[in-house]
Each structure stands twice: as C-alpha cells, then as structure tokens.
Length: 420
Ligand code: T4K
Image (cartoon, rainbow, N blue to C red):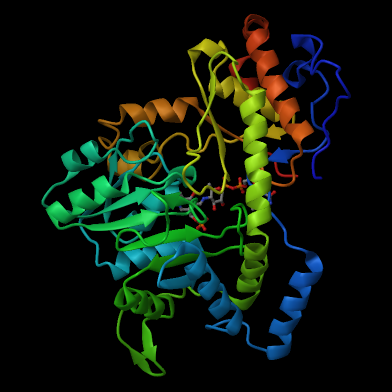
C-alpha cells in the first residue's frame, strides 16, 4: 500500500476543526494519496518482457509487442482495428487529420484540454458546446452550434461514461458530419452493452501512466473502418505507405516496444484493477452516504465500467465550497483533483482567440465549479477511503467553524498539486 492513514481504530478522524491540517493539525495521511497513481504490473513479468525486446533489438517501428498490444486492445474493445500511438493526444490529432476535418468542430469545453488542443494545433476551430446532466455533450446544444463551417463532432466519454452515442450519431448523419469520440477515459467501458471502441468514425483511447491500463505514455485509434485504420497507420509513420512511398502528410506517432510491453502487462492486470476500483467506488458510496451537499456520481450498474474516476459533486448544502475542500484535502495529503477546471474555454489560447466561446455554457460552468475527483486505485485500501469519507463528513458537520477559521485568500490559493 502506498498510503498510510494517520489514525487508529475508532478514534474520530479529527478532534476539532483546529486539528485540520489547513489550520496547523497533523495531516490525515503521512504520504500523498493521488488521483492517477499508476497501476504497476508485476515487475518480474515486465522485466522479462523488456528483456525480450532488448534481445530482439527491435525497439520501435511496429515491433511484435506493439502488434500484440494492438491485437489485445482491439479484442477487448470489440473493434476491428486498433492503431497504437505514442499518446492519446497524438492519436486524436491523427484521427482528426485522417477524417479530413477542417473549419469548425464541436466538442465539450468540460474535458481535458488535449481534446481542444488536438484541433487548434491543426488550425481547426474548436467550438465549445454545453453538457447535459451526464456531464457529456448535450445533443440538443450540439445541433445549435452547427454552422456551414462545421465538419465534425468530438464527443468525450467523460470519466468512462459514454456520451449519448445514438443522438450524436443521428445529428451527424443528418448534417453529414464526421463523429469521433475521445475515449481517453473509457477503455473497458460499455454503452448499451457494447464495448466502447467501435462507435462513430473512430474512438481514441489514452494509455497514459495515470490511466487504469497504462503503457507509460500511449494512446490508440480504434475503428471498424479498415481503410481509415490504414490511413492512421500511415500517418503515424510520417505518411509512409511503403519503403520509399509517402502518400500523405504524416507525423511520428508511433508507440515503442517498451511502452507496448508495459501496456500488455497492464492489460493482464486489468480485471484485478477494475475489481479494486469497483470495491473502492462502493466503499465511497457507503462512506459518503447522506453527507449534505456531497453527491457521488453514479456508475450505471447495467454497463461495464472501469471505475477509474471517483467523482463527487459538492453543492451549497455542504456549507464549504469545492475549492475549499480541494485546498483542505491537499493539506491532509489527499491530492483530490478538479477534473476538469476551469473549462477549456477559460484556458489559453481559447479565452483570447475565441473570447465569446464561453457563451451558452451554463452547465459547463456549474460542473467546473462543483466537481472533485477523489483518489482511487489498488494503492488505496478500505481504511484509506473510510478516512477520506470521514474527513469530508467532519468538514461538512463543522462547516461553520471551517468558514470562520478559513485562511486568507492568498494562503488558500497556495494549494497546487505537489509532486513527491
Ligand atoms: N482526452 C482526455 C479526456 C484526457 O483526459 C486526456 C488525458 C487526453 C485526451 C490526452 O491523453 P494523453 O495524451 O495524456 O495520453 C493527467 C494525464 O497526464 C492525462 O493523461 C490525463 N488525460 C489527465 C486527466 O490527467 P495531469 O496534468 O493532471 O497529471 P499529473 O502529472 O498532475 O498527475 C496526476 C496525479 O498522478 C498526480 O497526483 C501525480 C500522480 N502521478 C502521475 C504520474 C504521471 C504519479 O503518481 N505517477 C506518475 O507517473 O494530467
């Protein structure tokens, strides 16, 4: 276990608000607990695989590990083609380029900024669209954002929860637009019983170190369109179609053999990680029950889920704001994250280049202000989670004192993700 919770038995989590770490008390955890702590495979098995790579002296450019990784990902995602890439952002860029998108593309602002950057980097205007109660693109709003310059829509399966695939597909069909999905969070998840990977023209996974299946860095384009997959393969390798034949614009988007080896070993642990994440989710569900103003995002029990993100909404009934929780949890060495804040439209270059892009995003603004992601993963045990839940309950119960004692704004804003 990574974390060590500093309390014993039935002792209350804190004796008074004075003992909260933000007010000088001892932190609840002696070491940082993270959102996104990498899940590691068995070192011996990984090292053996890496030795094989060294023995073969085939380090990158479509080696056997990448081949195997692609085969396994495609099988698990129930899709004909998986094209592995060096990371999810480049995979998005290549999918966008291979789909021939241009002009304007509609996407949520409530996403990791990579989704928007992948467009803007290629001179395509990201058009930010509001979300609905699922925190994913609101199809009704999408339709309102379509202009003669629109060529596509990118839905984001946020925290592993699928977008309204059917409604988005119908809109794209009606307006002759290409539909892509940023499925960075959604490997191992399903929509209406079908694994995510085969929807739209293509879906893009991330296998970054912080994802529940990781290849150190890594990403993939998944598609049922063989010709599209071939284009992506060529584009990730400088546009080469044959030894001396370049047939399109390309880039170096290749995954290397070490990354693929890590990815394969990580896939081997996938089921165990999901079980651990799922147990954590239910521990949170029990621990957060009936805390005023704190609501755990529900995971649909009828769908496959990787439970990678544990997300709470904190509203005014908690008496303490989401940002205050964020600050005081960091003081306790609990590195909760505001995924995603402040919304892409408030980040550069978007807030300068498209100053009006924040219009019509009321649900996005709300989500950005109220969402907090809590630590999970096999590195956490039940006791850790109970301690986190008890802390949240304690803070809500002592809300008035917390507000009273709250540090000056400059001290409060000193909270940033600290690297160990
Ligand atoms: N689309 C969406 C919707 C995405 O969420 C992402 C990436 C992408 C596209 C792009 O995919 P990639 O190009 O990344 O494959 C992290 C990840 O870097 C990023 O992959 C992820 N989404 C995003 C949600 O989270 P940061 O800047 O928040 O990560 P960082 O460095 O603050 O780390 C998070 C926590 O994990 C920290 O507490 C430290 C801990 N950590 C991190 C690393 C890398 C470790 O303990 N060990 C580690 O090795 O972006």
